[in-house]
Image (tube, rainbow, N blue to C red; front, top):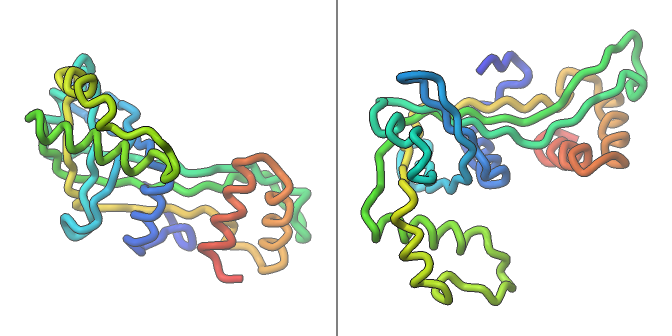
Length: 204
């Protein structure tokens, strides 16, 4: 990832937080050809120095064989993004730009194909994502889940390198950054999510 100052974020905790918020990652393998699949991920922060990603794909997706064969994979996470109008700044001249947050995680994959391991992955993902007040529980459809396990392949990726880019108008003056944030707060859902990241991750 090309992430020059001031956009490079070295804090691993920030990267892990973003992964948990974004969830949907793109897993990329480069052999025998470039292939990418979109996968919901969990992260176990306690396993490995930077955490371990946990996910699964449809067994009909041939990429799982590439994941199994290669020593390293890349998983990218793209968070909220928003167009920035030059009219929002107090200073001139300005041109349009784009704000976003992204994480690139590199790591060693380990395949999980045994039924107990796959079942744990599926149930953990359900428990993580299902609303706390939901009346649905995986146990209610246990037999159905058991049948589905034959159709998926799981993997765990111990993160060996992680890169985070926060392009949140850090290079601007406080006044210009506030003006951008105010404009975003009255925009689309994506705009508002960028404003929330600015509020949370940048000094006020």
